[in-house]
Length: 320
Image (cartoon, rainbow, N blue to C red; front, side, top):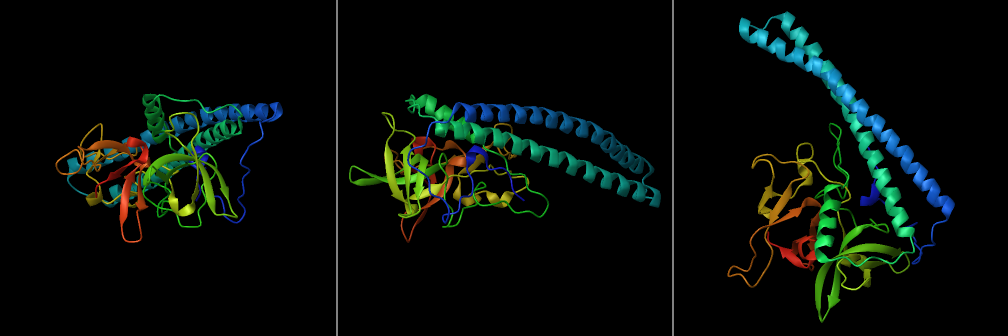
């Protein structure tokens, strides 16, 4: 089952993907059509949210009956065929109610993702120069981008797709313009990982043009082969429904929750260690990193390293 890719990314076949380096400015009619489409989607989202609340209110009555039935069984200290049949019917209804609510939530998430996708396409088509941001503003923007990444909601028995949390993509995957990636670039006779945005992919040369997100003065563009590019997740994973989409615990210092130490939610950050020779043990104290910015990168044919692309914009390595 698919989820709308939204601004987080999408599947583009390497066989039919060839993008022009320079986008034409959008016409006024296209801009108006995009704005009207966004308005329609926001109206749909408003209705979907109300439907979710209505379904939840209807389901509460059934859940209350389940709770009361269990209380009566506890008071009587026996389980009769009557109670068994009654609970069986109540739980069946509860599961149906939950699935209806879940489907409405999936539609809501898809609608949000489509709005983000339209806005992202308008930004990419704009001929306005890229604004230069202060580092604090950039880091805030990256954090917001991670928090608003579309959430993958699996159905029972469904596995999360590539680029959902820690689930990697295969070599045939091609990131589309606007996608965020980790890029390995050469600078001052050394190589570093940076956080970058895809501009184009050339199917003839099998290379990307990417812009450094953290460039000091406007755009800093690099042309890199696919092996030097690692796409960032385009969906946020939920540890409650898709635990397999998270890094193994022994790779990560720990996962942090702002609420409790035991609760693990999609918005929780990882607590990670970075290489830093200024510390006696060679690693900095733990830093909090959103799940979108923790990825796996192959340093060479023998070594596989985990990276954080947020703190230091990908220029520091994660201990594992």
